[in-house]
Length: 348
Image (tube, rainbow, N blue to C red; front, side, top):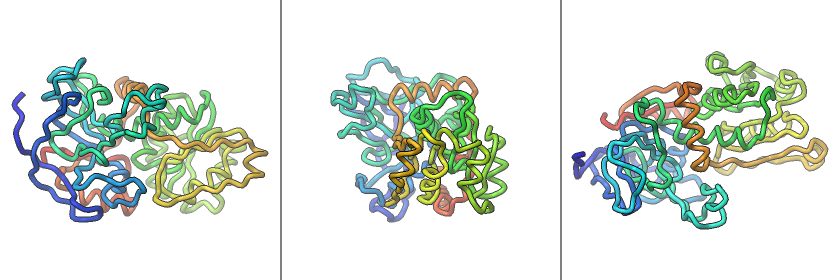
């Protein structure tokens, strides 16, 4: 395939600085890398943090953000095996890891100290051509709608891993805090596909309708509910067996520790800068509550999450905009006005 030398990208040179839609060079893949012609890229709340630089992990600068890129392999390094030009491939948050430390050897490669992160420490998918480590790049079945699958490459994988971390059984209740957002809307669907009963928590009548349309059996509107803890416990007859916190509300996370069922598991996923969760020792011990953090999925989690999508069990509600419109999407994200997921078309 013919590969140009320059391309359009959305790049920033300083954290919180101007978001620049401009021409930059097309990267040359290293011996272990693929060069992917990114067709579409989902927009994640992490991209907002990367731009602001408000996490304790520094970004590379200048930086091309994005880590939900779906596209076509157009070139590869000389050491790459198992891929060919024309394959569909995805740019994930975990671009690469060392593949040899204790975490990489025990399927915990996202926890590798030498992990390289797309759209954070490695230029990501808000460009027309991006590089990805061939071992970690997502394999996407031929014929897949690349716009619709792009959010699965981070949001889908992340919530699927979180649901596995909750260690639930079919028929048990799971609460999804932030159920109508980009992550939450997928978490509701994965939970339903895995056989769980879902109570969604979010704010607004439109979000209630949206979450229920995706499979939530019940919904608690924190804007109109006086006692969220009691409401969730009443609906689930004593509290959900698991809670997936994908919202970026510290208060919502704190409430989840209170309403979770005895022996239940609270899973922390969303990463509001500087947030803390305080668990009262007495209640936590007596209830035997588990509080677990869930990061992104490993390669097996990624393949499984993509398989759910490929079998038609997951449909991400998306709105497609041009890459040049990304700054406006960031504004909506900051205002909490996004239902579902925005996807950028890199050609516009």
